[in-house]
Image (cartoon, rainbow, N blue to C red; front, top):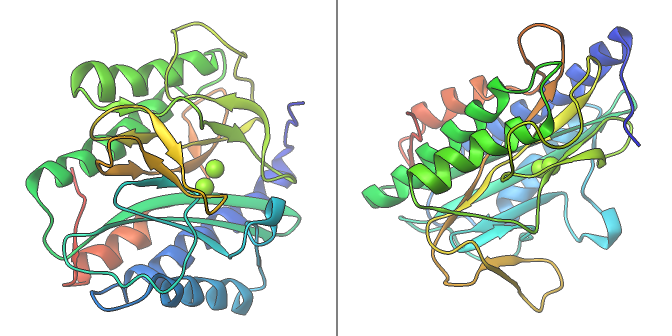
Length: 267
Ligand code: MG
Ligand code: MG
């Protein structure tokens, strides 16, 4: 079921979505080698609670933490623990916040210290693909137009693997609503985009093969070939005009540029 949001609901939802970027920035300004992933999680969780939100992911279908933290070859749905960040790691942080009766959901992949050129390229291409997908997120287009833009750029142009099993999604009062928003597909296919829809667009792009495996911790998804994977996610409100991005990377990128322990994933 697709739930269309009123203008008043978008105001409330935007506030939840913008808080997600601020929670990211709180962590991004502090990321450094030697931190554990649980410390990263705790910074984010405390920030969410201090700002009147609730972590959307905690206990969602039994998920054990406030954030999803997926390192290196982990694609998504990793959870924090005693793993220590080190130079050369990439860490995908996915944050969901419930506030004002609505969820915001945004992911960003950070590079700790210096990372190899091929990893910088993976991050840059994945992030670019998100914006190429967003550019198609306007009323009158179909979901497949978004999917196709992401796949063409990442898979056809750059030879990366596009994860098939996990996809973007509608969101609002529920963390996951219809429609599904795959990162692969045909132009002109799938549900029609209409004003008032809000969708999370979230390319999950593997440096190597597209296949994944599930770790026996019940959650973490890894690349089958154990090569790195990147993940960036925005929540986008469909209008008759330009795509309205409810989340923001502005504060994240500011923190990333100003933290000497991070490599900026600019493009
Ligand atoms: Mg999502
Ligand atoms: Mg997410």
